[in-house]
Image (tube, rainbow, N blue to C red; front, top):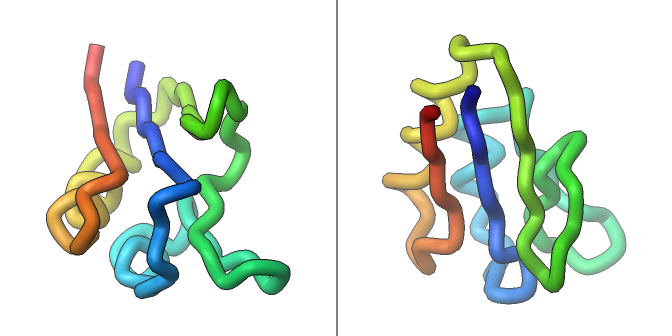
Length: 76
């Protein structure tokens, strides 16, 4: 399983995650911050759990590109 987590409150809206992983991230038109698509919110941590291992590479690129380091990827 792939677990992707986003601390949305700390997002600065740089759009790098969307450029690296456009099928997992999009920018909100309301506040200009990143949205982790199909994620669940738990106290400001948005988490996506997926069995699709093809998303790992793109999400890891998003982790590396994020200037505020608010994205994490864990593979179990």
